[in-house]
Amino acid sequence: VHPIRKAVIPAAGLGTRLLPWTKTVPKELLPILDRPAIHYVVEEAVEAGVEEVILVSAPGKDAVAAYFDPAPELERTLRRRGRTAEADELRRLSTLCEIHVVRQHEPLGLGHAVARARRLVGEEPFAVLLPDVLVDAQPGALAQLVRQWQGDPLLAVHPVDPEEVGRYGVIRPDPDHDGRILDLVEKPAPGCAPSHLALTGRYLLDADVFDALAETEPGAGGEIQLTDAIRLLLAAGRTVRWATFDGVPYDLGHVAGFLAANAALAARRGLVAPVLLGAAVAR
Ligand code: G1P
Image (cartoon, rainbow, N blue to C red; front, side):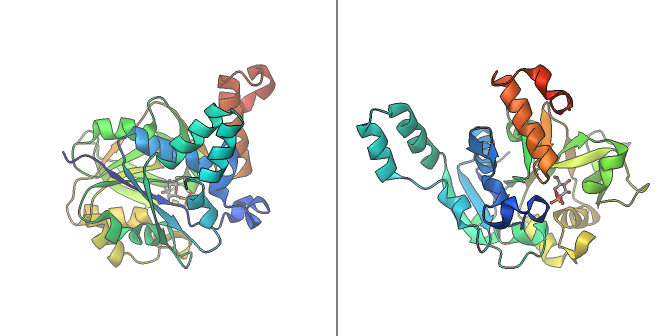
């Protein structure tokens, strides 16, 4: 199969669930321990073999892409002061991969955001990583997905509790074909979820999804949903597969998820005694 060299990272959301934090700071730049959330996601993509990231940005969120810019002045100053490790780290950050920015001018949904990347993705298969989800995993979730890829669209899923299922896209696995998806539903109503397997926010897709997105009508929340475009692929007869991964996903779209992610990483690095963190770490 063709290598996955490109990744689309939608970072155009308004972050309304994280106000007032996100009034002036894009949610992708909120810190998980010592670095902004977006840093982990780009590293995850690079670890999986991605060479080119297409960041979907929005007005007021230029600082997200700027985070990956070279900072020659700062680097020189650090080197002059003998702070080589920090200078090297800054250099590494700006050479991780190529970053391209496309813009979504109106918040019309995740599917609409991904469609903005069509021209830069071209005809090759590509990954989508939602930066709202930090997956604590080794190797990273995307690398695990790439390893399982057979060429068909492949979606990472994780099990969720029944009371949480309505927050996600949820798959109906094919009982007759291992690893295939029969259908999927974005944000199912209570009692209507086809399984307890939720889309994690890591996808391997190909250019067909752009044709599907062009036909996708607004769905859940009145937004153009990526989930609905993938449904159209299924309706057109494409095989779409699901895979699980070893690791823990943290939903950074709300404050509790941020705290849990910070707590888990801090405990692993020995920064705080795990006993202080209680339920957050157990999650
Ligand atoms: C998005 C996707 C959903 C997926 C979720 C993962 O929803 O639409 O299918 O399960 O990310 O976090 P959002 O969180 O943007 O509402």
